[in-house]
Length: 116
Image (cartoon, rainbow, N blue to C red; front, side, top):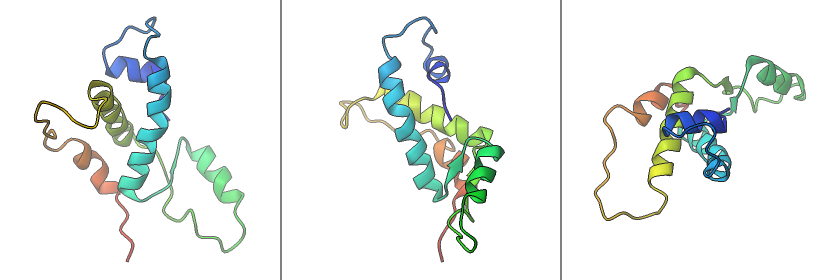
């Protein structure tokens, strides 16, 4: 869903610098999982991959009813998290870090699926 090259661009790292490739490779699935959990929906890279997943289901299986294809705003939210995790690699900080108003929550909020 997100490439290492996109991570480098988001973090202002030249494409030929490979020092952080392993870090980005480990961080990408974490960020995808964070967004999936934030919106409580399965995500797919493309309509074709979503259609293939639906076609593979048994009749009556509703596990993909909430599934969706990743939108550009969700991709942007993922890239914002990548940059945040790149800059803040520890669980604690000596600085006070505050969320940017209307950033991640603003981008993923409209896609949140709430179970009733």
